[in-house]
Length: 260
Image 1 (spheres, rainbow, N blue to C red):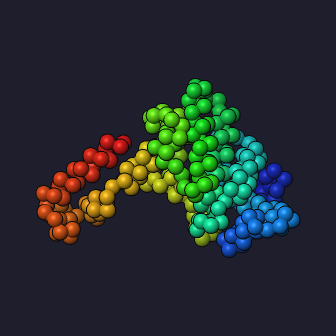
Image 2: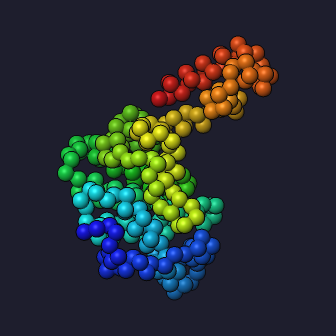
């Protein structure tokens, strides 16, 4: 079977409707606040209007030999979960929230049907971590940090990272996974990564390590390594001595290295 065929699961993909972002928000509000009949109709329209989103996501799993009809059905389950759990009060595009939900559902399906054997203890830890991530995402509209996952599961951070690494396939972070004609969502947009040679969990840890720095430390890091300024130039811009910049730079890099 081909991912590029017109019909998948009996659905003519060439005739799938496309909803504007405003219409999506209207439907989501109706699903949340409307009458039972209005909710039902809005949910059906929302599902049909986002089947292209599901199709775009499952295309990234092409070449594995999996049946696209099966993946499409599984992706639709992820879509429905995203619709049911979407928080209209957050200023977030539906695709930004829905894409990782659909990917998560497809990956669970592939994981459960994977021929590569992963130990039961690792698999159980990974399942618990993924369940927590889904719950956390629906409540906070963001991915939890590794520390938050390890704290919730009462496990060392290393155990959580190893378990998640065991069930996730490496992909290019520059790979587009959805576009609505105006905005393209890449893998890196979902996990905050800009280096497709490193594992995405390590990159989450790096992002959190930088986020924990003070404003001055972040500024020094940005001026030195993103704008390429010398320590003397940074010192003049911030208003401190070059020796202080050198000391702060070493402290910042030490903090990040320790977290990683």
